[in-house]
Length: 193
Image (tube, rainbow, N blue to C red; front, side, top):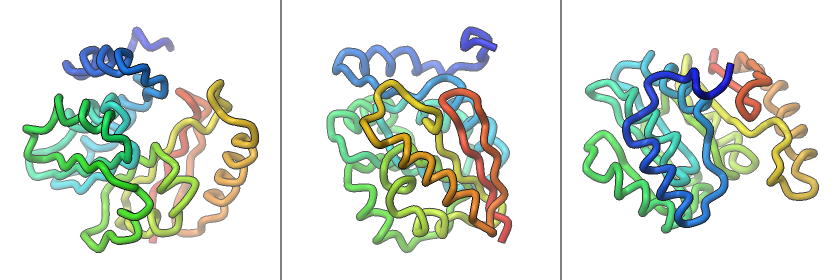
C-alpha cells in the first residue's frame, strides 16, 4: 500500500506541508500515522487528547479532523517557529490548545484529567518522562509513538535508545502492546488497568 491510497487527507495538510518546507522543517509525520491517529481518535466521544511534539501541525491536522463535538486536544512543542505555523492554521479552533513550552516540564506539572490518547512524537513522553506520561492515560486509553524503525536522520547511538525504549514498553504489565512494522515503525498501546 502506498501513500497515494490514503483517503480523507485533511484539507489543510498540503498547505501545512508547504509552510513546513519553506522553513526547512524535515521531520514531518507521514500520512500513515495521521490516518491511524484519526481512526483512533474518532473512536472516542468527549475525548481528552494530548500530542507531545506539534511540529508544524501535520499530524495535528488529522487529529483535529477526528475530534467529536465536546473533545479537547492539547499539543505541545518547544519550537516557537513550529508552533506559530500550527497556530496560523488552527488557532481559531476552540477544541484545541497549542502550547509552546518544554514538554518535559509540562508533563511534570500536569495535574488535569487523564487522556484518552497520547501521541508522543518528541523526546519528552517517549525517551524521557515515560512513566509520568503513561500514568496520564486513562484505562482503555491509547499511547502511540512512531519513528521506531531506523530513520536516516537518527544520530549515532539513537538505534540503541529506540531498542531500549521498546524493551521497556514491552515489560509494562498494565498495557497491551502492538508493534507495527508499518509507516515509520509504530507502537500502539492500550492501558488495561
